[in-house]
Amino acid sequence: MYLNKTRDELLKHDIKEKALFINSKGTRFTRQGLWKLIKKQAKRANINKNINPTILRNSFAYHILNQGANAIVVSKILGNSNLSSLQYYLNCIDKNIRQEIRDKHPRKWYILGGKIYE
Image (cartoon, rainbow, N blue to C red):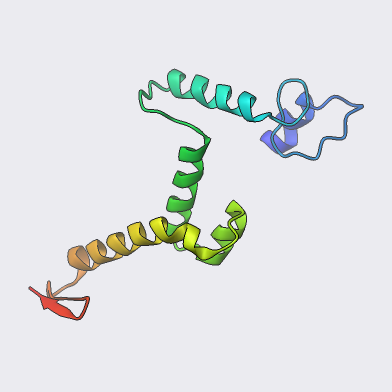
């Protein structure tokens, strides 16, 4: 919807903007413009937490990794130069995998970290 209709309406015919997301002037978002938009939408959604672009970026990485995305691909999408930047997300996913084993194992026996649990 955005790419086929809204973006074209926002683009001015004489501007050849290559950015995916553009503002109402048909130009790429500035850092401040994106920040204002996020704050406005968070308030509109009655979200009372501190929402910022970094939180959105972290949420994106966490969710797609949790759905099985390749960590190297996610790292490249985020523009990280090495995988150590993804260590926090990978640790969260490791905890989710452990919990999934605990919840789903038919015999309720778990082999985690070299230990067997009942």
